[in-house]
Structure formats: structure tokens, C-alpha cells
Amino acid sequence: MKSKSIDNLKNYSTILLFCFFFTVLFLGGVSEIFKQKNKDFSNLNNIQNPIRADILANLKTIKIKNNLGTYTLSKDDKTWFLLEPRLMPANSKRINTIINSLKNSSVKSELENEPINLSNFALENPSLRVDLFSELDEQLKIQIGLINPINDTSYITVSGVEKIYQMNVFHRSFQFVKISDLIDSSIFSMPLKDINEFKLYSRDFKDPINKLQKRNTNWKSKKYNSITKENVDKKIQSILNIKTYMIIDKKNEDLENLINNYLEKPLYKITIKTGQKKVKYKISSLTKSIPELKLEKRQYFLMTASDRKYTYVLQKDYLKDFYIRYSDLK
Image 1 (tube, one colour):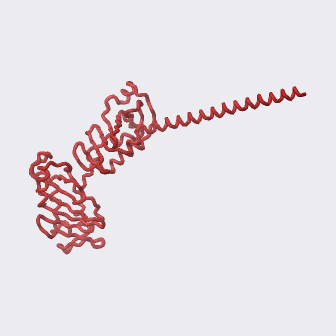
Image 2 (tube, helix red, strand yellow):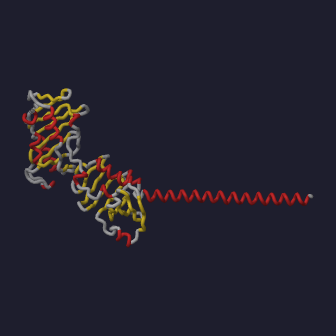
């Protein structure tokens, strides 16, 4: 009887030991499954984001090369500038669109980075390239090859990653971009609706030759008794629409003296008041030839704004738009 009890106890021990090993193996298998799933998700995230988010978050310079030209954009104290082909303020909305297109593009498929694939997807010598530089001087090179108009995707390579990616809606921001898309050529920083007072001075006159003040929703003029809101709005807006040809950011001593001489006694001065600020502008007469800036004689004039740190160069056709006649306002 005692021997039988001992045998039963051994059987129970064997069963318990078997259950223990089974449990360990089961839990180990589950653990490996979760590890593999995490690994798969990690790989999926890498496929979805071949362009490094840390570089996009700290962009300093963007260089775009397409069939229309080469354009270099750089950020200085949170303000974007076009450096190449000429120095101009950049269109911040367009820059944000470009960055968002890089950030939000997704991958449809992934291929091996092999010679036959590079050839098939026009990536051996692509005409569309984007170089990104971070504030830490990290660099990321993106090459854009074949563009599929049927499903609106493009094939790209990214430096540091030995893969070819088929990307959704990636190329649109770069394929046909031109200089006019990238620059902010406006000089006046306020919209018409915010302007409460507009004063135009001529040469050395202390009093304005035109003073327009907004009373409620209508304009009043010290010089003219009968003016219409529609025509005053139209004339002021035509001045606000004036665009710069280029900006002068760096000056040697001779160039700085030349600019100061032109703007010390300007042809026109403008003062604009809004509810938040007052901005003063100086407009020069037509300049002589300025070889340093490749400006021909009497083809351009200069302008400054008190809320901007650089000098503008404008084409001569805009100069006549500053003058205000009674026929413009009545």
C-alpha cells in the first residue's frame, strides 16, 4: 500500500514537472512572437519614414535641383532666404509646404538598390535632387527618379539607406518649382484692411503731398474733398503690390556709402500706420550703374523699410506707381 502511494506521488511530480516545462516553453514562444511583432513594426516605421525626422525638425538649408534650375534656401534666425540663384526673402508658406511634403510622404513599396533597379527607375543620373542640411551640419541627399503619372508616385533614394522607395505624392513640391514659387518679393508687410493712415512725401517736403486717413470704413483726404473708398483702396493696393527685384544683404564700404547717398535724400517717403505699428519707407531715384550688383544705369531704384533689415532693389517701372493723382482717388 505504501509502495503504491509512493508511485502515485512520483506520477504527480512528473505531471507537475511536465506542466512547468510546457508553461516555460509557451511563455517563451509568446515572448518571441511579441519581439518579432515589435521588430516588424519597427521595420514598417523605417519604411514609412526614410527621410529622417530629426533632420527635418532642425533644417538649416534646402538645396533643390530640377530641370528649371538650382535653388538654395537657408534659414537665418527663423527667417528663410533664397541664396541661389540670387539673394531674396523666401516664401515661408511654400517652404513649409516643402517640409511637410517630406515629412508626410508615405512609402508604397521598397526595392533593392541594385544597378538594374537604378536604371529601370531613372535613378542613375536623376535630374531631380533635394539636399537637406541640419543645424548640426548633418546632410541628407534625396534623388528622385521615375515619376509614375498613373498612381502619382515617384521612385527615390535617400543617402545612408541602401533601398529604393516608391513614394506617394512626393515629387509635386520639387518637379516644376521655379524661382517665383520660392521667393517672397513683397515689400509692404501689412494687408490693406489693417491700414489706418497712409502718407506720401516727396523729396524734402516736410508735409505729405498726400495724406489719407481711414474714418470708420471710409477714407478722408486732407488734399481732396471728394474721393471714393473703392478707388483709394485700389490705388493703395497697387502700391502694396509692388515687388522687389532683389535684396542687398551684404555690402562693402563703397556700396554702403552709395546706398546711403541715394536714400539720404529720397525721391519719395511713405509712412503707413496700422493699429499695431508705424512703418516708414524710403524710395530713391533711379540709380547709376552698380557693377557690384550687376545693375545697369537708370534701370533700377532702391527702397528701405523700417521693419526690415535689408535694402531692396526694384525695377524702374514701379517708380511711377508711387505717385498719387486726384484721378486715382476720385
